[in-house]
Length: 212
Picture 1 (cartoon, rainbow, N blue to C red):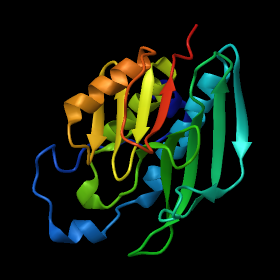
Picture 2 (cartoon, rainbow, N blue to C red):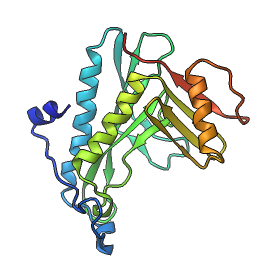
Picture 3 (tube, one colour):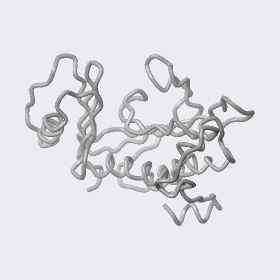
C-alpha cells in the first residue's frame, strides 16, 4: 500500500505532537491542510483494486446512503461493496464521505469501513482536528489493520443493546460491555463455530478468511 501512495503522490506527515506533546486548546477547532486527508480515499481505492485481483472477489459500487441508522454521521458520497465467493466471509464496505468542515470553509475526506451493511462499523475516521492528528502513518495503519483483519479472518463483530465488540486472532476491543474478557472469549468461540449464549437482541457477524 505504501508503494501505491508513492505512485499517486499522496502526502505524508509526522505526528505533530510527537506521540506525547501537549495539545493546545485552539487545535480542537482547527484543521490544518484538510486536503491532505484525501489520502484516506486514495487508500480505499488502492485496497479496492488490490482486493479486486483476488480469486472470487467482486466489487460493486454503492449509491449514496446513510452511514448509520440514526443518520448522525450523514450520508456517504461514494462507496463500494466488496465480496468474496468463499462461504462464510463478510462483505466489506468502503464508504467515502466529503464532509463539510465546521469551523472553516470546504470539505474534508473521511472514510468509514463497515461489514455487511453501512451501520456495522469497524473503523470510522470521525475527527480530523489538529488536536486529534497523530500523523498519516497512524491513520493509514489503522485503516490497513481493520481491512486486513476482515479479509484475513476470522473476524467477529457483536452489537448489543448499547454495547459492541470486535475480535480477530491478533486482538479485539469492546465498548460499554460489562466483562471485556468474557466478550472476547465469546467472539473467539463464535469464530471457531461454537454455539454461544449471548444477551438478547445481540447481532452477530462472524466471518472466515477470504484467502484460499
